[in-house]
Amino acid sequence: MNIEVRVHERVLQFKAQGRGAKGQNEYEFSLEFLLPVKSEVSHRSTQRQVNITLRKEQRGWWERLTLQDRKPLFVVPDFDRWLDESDAEMEIREKEEKKEEMKTARHEERGFISLKRGLLFAYNLVQFLGFSWIFVNMTVRLFIFGRDSVSDTFHTISDVMFFCQILAAVEVLNAAFGFVRTGVTPTLIQVVGRNFILFIIFGAVEEMQHQPVVFFVFYLWSAIEIFRYPFYMLGCFNTEWKTLTWLRYTIWIPLYPLGVLAEAVAVIQSIPIFDKTKLFSIPLPKAVGTSVSFSCVLYVYLGLMFLGLFINFRHLYKQRTKRFRTKKRKAN
Ligand SMILES: CCCCCCCCCCCCC[C@@H](O)CC(=O)SCCNC(=O)CCNC(=O)[C@H](O)C(C)(C)COP(=O)(O)OP(=O)(O)OC[C@H]1O[C@@H](n2cnc3c(N)ncnc32)[C@H](O)[C@@H]1OP(=O)(O)O
Image (cartoon, rainbow, N blue to C red; front, side, top):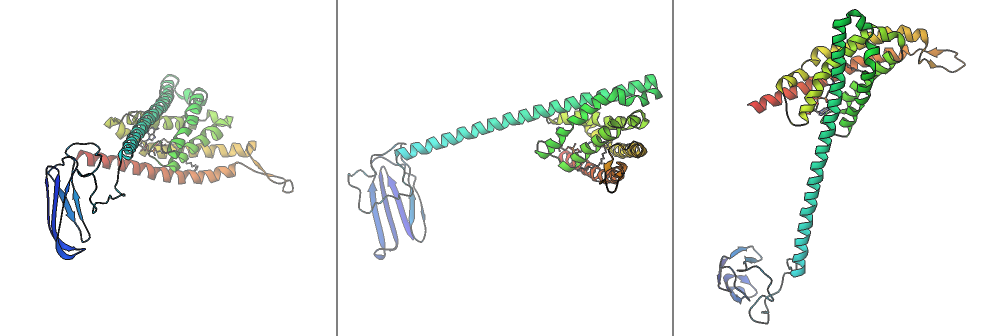
């Protein structure tokens, strides 16, 4: 198709060769607009139609399209694209409302992120202070009182340990609600595993409270946490201290198996006590006339501990690899 479109002042002139109502022919028309239009004109033709785009010289609403009062017969509005003054106002208002909504949403989102960050920071700070107190207290007491301090660990430390470990349940919620990028299972294993030892094995059995194993368990638990929580505190502000990151992702390698071993020793030591005292024993129906010792649960738990160790060791190994691989790639 041979198309010629020209605009001068306010007149559009169109000429084209093609097949239309009069078959193969030359078609032409001209339109004199009500007000001037810009001389740049663009057009695009398809098999069915020619689209011509013109721009007004000055923005604003026209009373009508053409200079002459009566619209030429061949001009018909395309109502799909038709906009009148009230439509445009509505469109502008809608756009502004959308912009305002987006602004408010972004504002709320930023508020939520700062609140989340603030709460996480406060949580990590409290845990850091708690575990630091435990670690420093145990170390100082060990130097001052020697072996006597070991058997007294539970009575001097347990209140703060109870507090920190109850509070640690927050970590399961953080993982479950997606507040931190981590899996629920490893966190649940960690929190349930420790609280089982703390509340059932040590808390409920007085004979266990003077055992040296309490010292080892508490010391191993706090030794990792005094690095883990400050690492998270810095993370809340997208900051990191390389040495601390290295310590957080490295010292669990010896500490975790040692911790599980110490916990396993505690469980094994408590078995005869549960058998003797019948504490938490599960009563059987009267016809059978006896009860199942809680030690059966402890045997099952011993198996679960090593499964838990495997799951969390693998999880921590993955976290370590991910952390150091990302850092290396960033450094390149
Ligand atoms: C289902 C119930 C079954 C019960 C079965 C019971 C089985 C019992 C087995 C129990 C064995 C437990 C033994 C244990 O008690 C022994 C010891 O603890 S010994 C001492 C050594 N221990 C450790 O080293 C473990 C310490 N604990 C942990 O590392 C975590 O608890 C763990 C869940 C294991 C791993 O942590 P996580 O998955 O969170 O990994 P990351 O630290 O890499 O964090 C991932 C990202 O999340 C961000 N994050 C996490 N927490 C926070 C927070 N509190 N505040 C801010 N940000 C947080 C973190 O920054 C990472 O983000 P990014 O990747 O962006 O940097």
